[in-house]
Length: 334
Image (cartoon, rainbow, N blue to C red; front, side):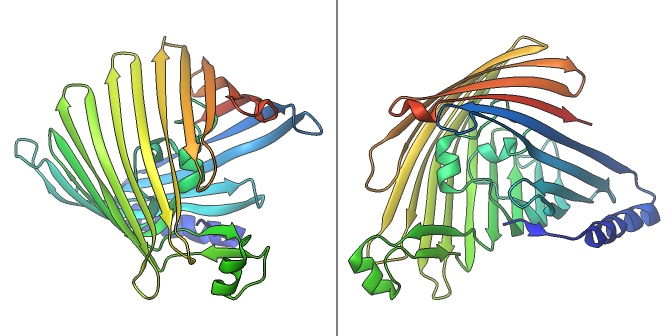
């Protein structure tokens, strides 16, 4: 769902951000990151593959006490080109630390859609394991989209509501009844992009260090039919240098004569020793009509210097050892 832009477009975009900030006298905050990976996998013909993972430059500016803007230009390793990753304006409608509601913000533009909790670590510099949870990859992926977002926060709860365009999903027609109903030949790939998607997440902090939440998203087609539904529950427990989190997601698509349902979950724990950390994750995912797939991921990282980390992840597929992989990553941020 990211938009490709030309080099001229990048300059025009930077100009559009810099000039209003300069005129208002506000400072620009420029940051970024990139990562390089080396993957060893038995099933690969060349057995080892090097690649550029993510690369991103972020420009942020606080225009006033009420408004801020953010633009991110990202590299897409699938197309080997630059894309507009994020471009949003955030307006603080209300802020009162001593009140029952501490803040109310509304944002509009292109942003990471806040379904579940994994969207906080979509950028590779923030993700301690190299790969994303299997259930996230197989349902909504790194979902970013254009639309609006409303955030309401208090000391013990938070709510986010969003409305966006909706992300594309696809499947191969392998059933004769589906082929007849859809009017396409067997073996064809059918793409689905909801006209709009709406949803949100509610988070609650019942005790110190623990947050539990629930998420929902529905994609409506041009006939206002719910073509895609995502539901999820999550928790995060963070204390001192230890972090433990988990998420359960169900995903249904109703685009043919039969409804497709997928579901899965993961648990992940991380312990930070300072310059080093250890992390482990248990993944389980069940596509529609297929048995559960289970993955075990173990990882470690070392901070070479400020802003530069070396990370390693080994992935074990309990059902198919040819899918096992070892990934070495170097990530740097500024």
